[in-house]
Amino acid sequence: MLNKGLVFTNDNCTGCNRCIIVCPILGANYAREENSLSRIYVDGEKCIHCGSCLRSCNHKAREYKDDTEEFFSDLERGEQISLIVAPAFTANYSKQYGAVLGYLKQKGVKHFYSVSTGADITTWAYLQYILKHQLSGGISQPCPAIVDFIEKYEPSLLSKLIPVHSPMMCTAVYLKKYLKNTDKLAFLSPCIAKKVEIDDANTKGYVKYNVTFSKLMGKIGDVSMDKQAAEELEYGLGSLYPMPGGLKENVEFFLGKDQFIRQIEGEEQVYDYLKKYAKRIKGKKEAPFLIDALNCSKGCLYGTGTEADKNDEEEILMELQKERGKSQRKDKKNPFDPSVPESTRLIRLNEHFKALDINDFIREYNHNAKVAEREMTESDYQKILKEMKKDTLEKQKFNCSACGYSTCKQMAKAIYNGYNKKENCVHYIKDELELEKACIHKMTNELKAAKVAKEAEYKNIFMIFDKLHTSIEELGEQNEHTAVDTLDMSEALEQLRRYAELLKDSLEEIEKFILDYENTNRIVVNISSKTNMLALNASIEAARAGDAGRGFSVIANQVRLLAEKTKEAVDESRKNSDALLPAIHELKEKSKIFVDTIFEVNEKTKTIAATAQEVAVQSEVIGSVSGEIAEKMEKILE
Ligand code: SF4
Ligand code: SF4
Ligand code: SF4
Image 1 (cartoon, rainbow, N blue to C red):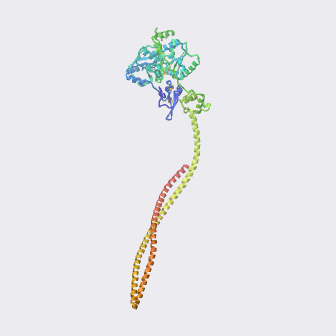
Image 2 (image 1 turned 120 degrees about the horizontal axis):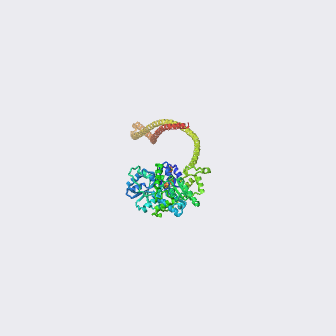
Image 3 (image 1 turned 135 degrees about the vertical axis):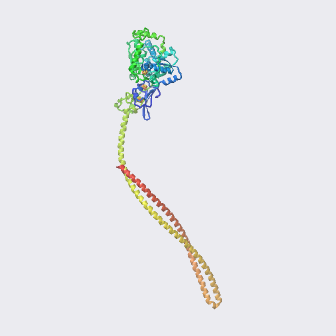
């Protein structure tokens, strides 16, 4: 039932811990972190619905649930509902009371009854029970927050809790059992905790709705309707129950003031008192005759479900005084006539309720509702103190209550039980912050030292950048030159290539010329062969001619010799050109390769020139960037 009970925390919570301060129950509030915010939620099983946190929270972060919405929607659906009205309502809204009941009548409520009648029955049943059982030290039980507390946290007092129904329940039992009312009953209630009572199996579901003043008035606002009166069942001093000491006044009215009735109220006192009282009973010490205990310091008149801050206290008390006056009329049967002695009043009271069976108004309590809490041993405590950094006696006794608990030990117990965490202790946070501060101080010094080292490094880097800048500039310039030189080289190579082409062409022409020359030689050889033959024939003819032919024969010989010489010369020349031709051919082929190679080299040279130009341009860019970096670094170092 974490934050799902009657009382719960909404999103307004700031984690201010005020609810923990005012809460009488250690584990009813628990701290949780949400979105880095510490919030305090309600554990519905541990909460006793005392309403203290609702009154104290300055951030409207605590709310409660009742049955107002269900009551109205059931009326709307035509459910038969009667309303029992707490006397505190009449006192709080003396002027609006009739109009509010008129409004509810119009909405469908069947009957209205004042709880004051049931309160008189409660007084009667108390007296019956106490006198019959000779009970002393009994605790009154009209307050469900007190009952809830005893059941959950001090069950050893259950035997002292008087087993008589509250005025609300006595009214309900009377209506159901004696007036045979078959409607569902709603209680117009000053109290959040009444919901726990009506849901308790020991109250048998007689009342279905807890409609608190605050929620009802918030829903209907100011109504101007025809007034409607409650169907007045006769009642006496029961109307005083909602005020502090109301039950005491009732009991003393019938038994006198000889016995000690301890009156105690207010969340700040009553629960501590009950804890001490349990010890007293355990120690078999003398106890008061009766304890009239209420959770709220001003009683149910300013109960947890009222608009306590809206209504005028004087008006309320005056209204109650009027009620007291009304009940004390002089009448020989009236048990509340103050002019007769207490013993007569008691006789009259018993006479007044003689038709009732006391067993109908007796109730039981839950003996198994005790909330278990882990008991913290000394070593657990020491361990938690250590975790909280409370390592000295002085620190262990801060007890500043900023966490919401009255002592550091209580906080340790809350941590031990998982209700809170050490981070909600301001001194823990302070110590953490101091450690953090020391850490930051150390880090600042380290940073300073690191800064000095970094500055030196920056200086180095700056110098390197400066050098780099210069080198890049130089590189740029050199590349510029390289690009120009390479272009010149490319032009020279181009020229060389053209010369090589010319050489290749010349060689081709020489080769062609030699081939032509060889053809010519062949013709000459042919002619010289034919000439030789002719000369031979001529010499033969000259020999035949004898002396006449002698001169001719000499010439023919000379011609033949010339022809032979010509042939020899041509043969010699052919041998030379045969030897020359392969050499020229090879030279021509190599010239071709030379031309191609020069072409390739030139292409590469051009690429180098382009690259060098690009490098020169990029060097300029890098040079200007590195220059800028160097400039900025110089500024950082200033
Ligand atoms: S009192 Fe409690 S519920 Fe209200 S804001 Fe503070 S911590 Fe949250
Ligand atoms: S209603 Fe009472 S018991 Fe419940 S959380 Fe609030 S202060 Fe604690
Ligand atoms: S004193 Fe009254 S209003 Fe307050 S908790 Fe008890 S019964 Fe409810």
